[in-house]
Length: 301
Image 1: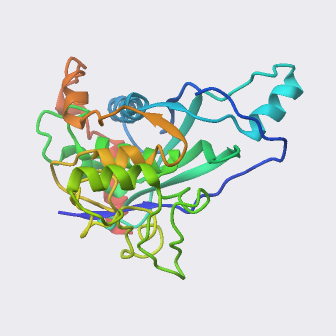
Image 2: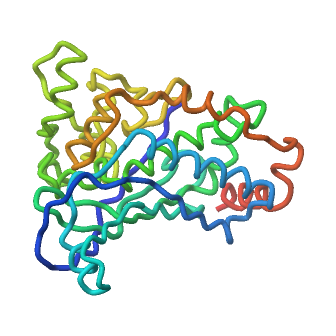
């Protein structure tokens, strides 16, 4: 089973000020979760909150820092009397809403606010929306014990937060690809990901960019069919039903966006295994009331 995962085009609100270099900056992803109108029960909201916060933590453990300070941080620091001001948290706003009914698009995400540094365009904040009609399926699929980390929703959350950080959504602004809806080029020019790709897979090719799937999928992912890391890489444009992984090539693509990372990607399985102590309430309460209403309303739409 595969379904679309989409990245919105980057919509960045940027100010203008003088550029400045800085030492590597601490990096952390924080999820700001709004489930007020999601239709979930309190129990469901708790489980979804654990899932989304854990996805943010997964990125915080793989990306270790940011290389450069932006013009916007310098300007704001001058305004508030803190010349060393830096942004150390990237905020991922998370909501659940109706998108296109069961199947099809599972979610979309992208940056909404960021800044320019001498060599990079960074995201500081972004929005991620998940399809209410797919929420039940994503949580139950291959997850009989309802562990909030052993479900496809967790993996979709990881995928969409990756887009908020800049995977796919900030490639063009950072000069990593010239792929657009009007120019479906599969060329990726980031030196870190390309070097890692060639080392790991014994090829002289560069990492192929997705050109299929239409707006939001094309140009915003590595190619599902020809990427040598495999279609089960969690950041390709289509979700596999199982065995999704973070390849080192994908991790190193964040170095091309101006971040420092682990030398080897923390596997999803190792991340989950370290958190197996998370208590999970009884499954019988999960879909009482609101969640079923959302699911039924979406099917009827």
